[in-house]
Length: 210
Image 1 (cartoon, rainbow, N blue to C red):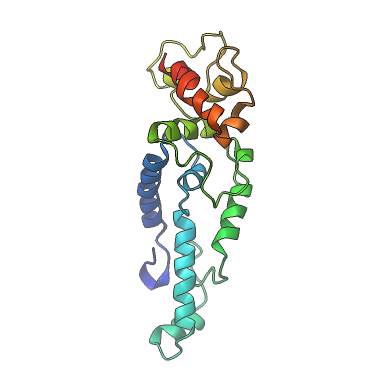
Image 2 (image 1 turned 30 degrees about the vertical axis):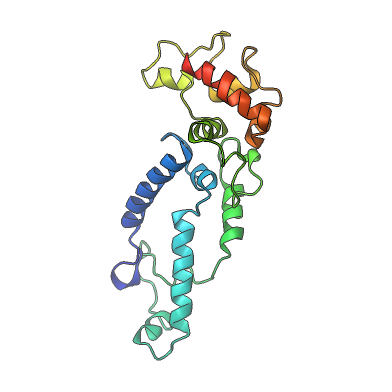
């Protein structure tokens, strides 16, 4: 948000981002511990930060094209920045390509299972599944869901162990558990083919229901 003297009020940005992220969690079925970069990818919604940057680019371009506006001089011939904690609207004047920037942001982010997504700007496989299946699929992708390790951490289960005796995390269920693993593991589940979806609705749902 642009505040006093053209500066950016970061606290307002953070408050808005928090609300938007909560909404995206509802759309994608992700739980709160899910890493933030996953949210716009799974919801196929551009992140708030990139939306603000594009809106700022458009505003600056409009102002630059109207030299008769009083605002033009303030932007083009702006004063030197004196306060380092301020973020003037003209500080990042170079326009961006939103698709390219989103791809770069995804590749540079340190997120679990990042290798699953080659293009973060497109709808991910399985987006047409019923809500319950889509939610569960995304929880496996992000490695955050109601597995016993998490339930135990949240105080909702007496043990974090799987029926096979190993610690039950989301990745264990799909990749390595001898009782539940999917042929092809998480990589195949991400593609959401018919067999993977069937496994998701039966084996995975049963394992998480115990």
